[in-house]
Length: 142
Image (tube, rainbow, N blue to C red):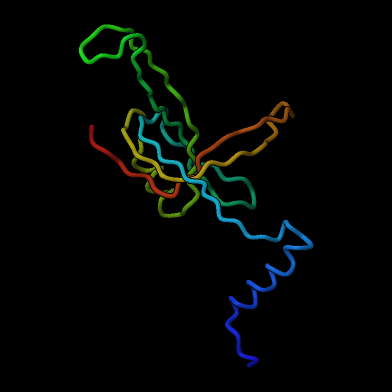
């Protein structure tokens, strides 16, 4: 009678308190990014005192689309957009391999999550930064 699995107790607790405090309801979400592109600069490694080192580089991805009539083989203007992404690699093994082998112009595939942050530049101006925290970097041949 007194032996209940822990998940049943937790579920009952969340269900009971969710009537009074709706913010306790657990919700699943996903933050995943997949990018395929070309490296814009050789990676740099940075380390702020008291924090883990990080390897940082930029990655360019391209989008192309046809405007006007989109019939196959027909005319229409082709438009293109290049988007630049800041990639940060914190995982120790991946960070070191990325720093050693990734080079400007290389074609790579990156998996990770998007992160929004804020920093103060050298002129004491607060700036916002968007970065991709890489979980995996795969080197592709041209």
